[in-house]
Length: 121
Image (cartoon, rainbow, N blue to C red; front, top):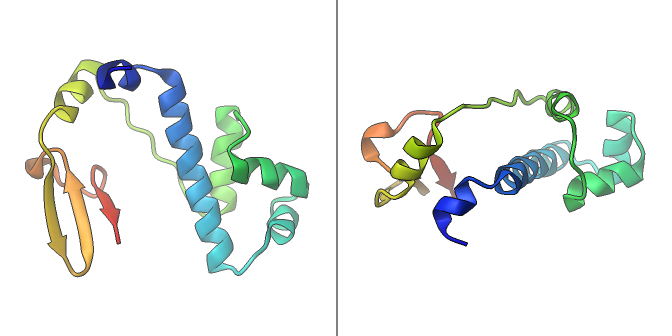
């Protein structure tokens, strides 16, 4: 599958959102030193449900996704970007900056804002 086709695939974007929710839940559990059972109690759900969340085996309604995000103290923000514009920007070479032990990558250095960069330690 070409990258352009991938970026137009709903499964790709759903998986990205699920992965980010997983990452946020894992971070929340570590920060609060919780195991899956404790998280289930905190969220008011079963341990099996938490296991599904952490395995990526779910496809929530948007309202549930937002509720879970808020339950762990996070506000999910969504952007709507024109598909063709996104694909065109995605084709641009990436610019990398190393600063204070952080590696920041952006497709266009002129577009650095708090909403459109990736930081990896």
